[in-house]
Every structure is written in structure tokens, then in C-alpha cells.
Length: 365
Ligand code: G6P
Image (cartoon, rainbow, N blue to C red; front, side, top):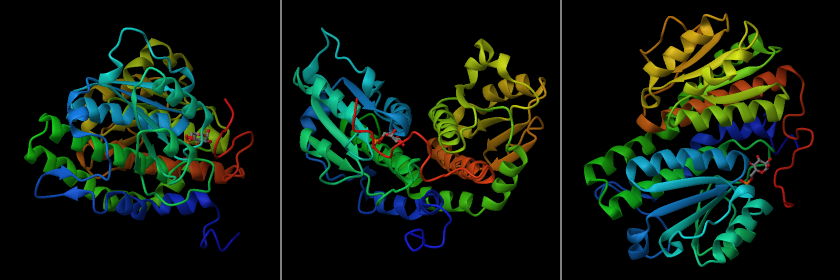
């Protein structure tokens, strides 16, 4: 109903704009500033969490991209081996120590059949399981050992938006907690990362405030042959997610690539009619990515850069500035590209909240 959309044309647009508040909810009560630690309402035994030597993350779709982002954070803050699998592809290999492995299912709905089935495969040899979910009382919460709730509030639009940023935020808090527990993170380093997490709502708001500019860019490039998103480190999963968002709601051809892989094949697709959206954020190796930007620029592709303020490069035809909040900056850049996808799809007259062939939650394998 129009009332449910609170004056927005679509639920997706409303939910994009709800992100600062969704993030405040995800963070609220979970930061212990003095201790430089996250305080999370989870019951997993601390001795177990100290002893694990591997984390497996299983998820589908947008939640899989949140898992890939979490891998970056966990490897850096906790110094632990992390494997991220599409839930439908997850197999437990023989010979690895199942008692020292934590399997984390990331699922907004808690009802995705592929993810539930991966969790059942993990439980069979006795692995400990954690769900990161938005839905209290969902099927997954009844099957796992413990749940971490992302507290994003209900999401109606089929294309996930606020649940993605809230998933990554909850996982950033979890990584901080693990790092402090296992001694890979000092209290001072904990304060730093928590400071970045605390800045997220305002950083996202500043991107939302630049919507009219992002909309003009979307209008300018609607109708392009394809859109490519390139990034490194934590910006790589965001490149995948931004491309998924655009293809889901506009049906345009969109692909996300690790910036370094461009030259190993995808460069053949680049023309003057394929805009390239490049993440040049401080935490995402901007100098290396800039070399890849030069490669596409010399083939005539229009380049839209997402950059830390003051880092604009001459190769960019357009720059969207993203507040510098360390390793979470690409997560904020993602919000700019949610708006980009939304406005391309809107310009094309697509049924944004209910794209053809897609469902909010897929309960068959
Ligand atoms: C469906 C939705 C996607 C979502 C995926 C995983 O395919 O259309 O937006 O990312 O399921 O959903 P989950 O609820 O497990 O996060």
C-alpha cells in the first residue's frame, strides 16, 4: 500500500533510506567503548571461540556477498582462515577438524532452503553453527546452536538493501569480538574499528543526501550495453553486490569483477558504451585499481569512481565521494550504488519491488 511505503514510490527506496536507522538498531547496546570491544548477545562458549581454527560461511545471493565482506574483516581482525561458500555448493571435506570449526549461515529471512540444507550438512559431522539473520523465530534459528540478529526491521522489496549493510555490520561486530577474545586485536585497535562502525549511520546518511546527483548519473547512463563494477579487498564483494542489485531490478547486463581480473578476460567486453564503476576507496588498494581504470578508460569506457574525498583521479569521468571510514568505506559506497541501480530501474519503468522471476525468499533447493 502507499501508506506502507511512507511516501516513497517503492519499498526498495524506502528501505534504502531506512539504512541509517537500521544501522543504529544493529549497533545499539553492542559497543563497549571502554573495553574496545563489542558486546554481543550470543551464547557460544568463549573457550570454543578461542579454540576454533576455521570459519566456514554459507549463504546465497546478497547474503553471500555479505559473507565475502565478512571474510575480509575476519581475516584482518581475527587472523583466522575463513572459507565462504555458496550454500548450494557447500560440502564438508574429510580430514578437517570439525570440532574446531564454526559454520556461520548468513540469511536475512532464515528460510532459504539452500542455506538450511548447508547447515544440516555441517551439523551431520558435529560442527557448531551460528546464524546471522534478521528474522527472530525463523526456521534457521531453530536449527543452529546460536543466532546473531541483525535487527534491520522488516524488508519488503525483493532486492535486499538494508539487510546487506546490517549483516556486514553485525559481522564486523562479531569479528571485533573474536579479535579481542583471541588477542589478535588490542583494546586500542578495537576502539578504532568500533569508531568506524559507530560512524556508519552518518556516513550512509551523507551518501543518501547526494541522491539527486546519483540519480542524474543513473539517468545519463540508462540504456548502456552493460555495466561493470570493479574493486579490490572489501570493495570486491561490494562490486559483486552492486552488479547483482542492478541486474535484479533493471534487467540490464551488469557484472562485478575483482579489479585485477579485468585484464584476464572481462576487458574484452569493455567499449565506449559500457560504463565502469570503480571503487577507489582508501581501504581498497586505490592505486592498483587506478591502473585498471586506465585500462578501461583507454578503451573509451565512461568511468564513475567511488572515492575517498580528495582522492579523485583525472581518469574518472565522474566521482562520487564516500566518507573515509576505513575498512567499512566500501560498505557505504554500496549505498550509492543501491541508489544508482534504483534510478536506472526506475528510469526503465521496471517493477522494482517485484522483479520478474525472483522471490524474496526461495524455499526450494
Ligand atoms: C533470494 C532473494 C535475494 C537474497 C537470497 C538469500 O534469492 O531474492 O535477495 O539475497 O534469496 O536470501 P536470505 O534470506 O537467505 O538472505
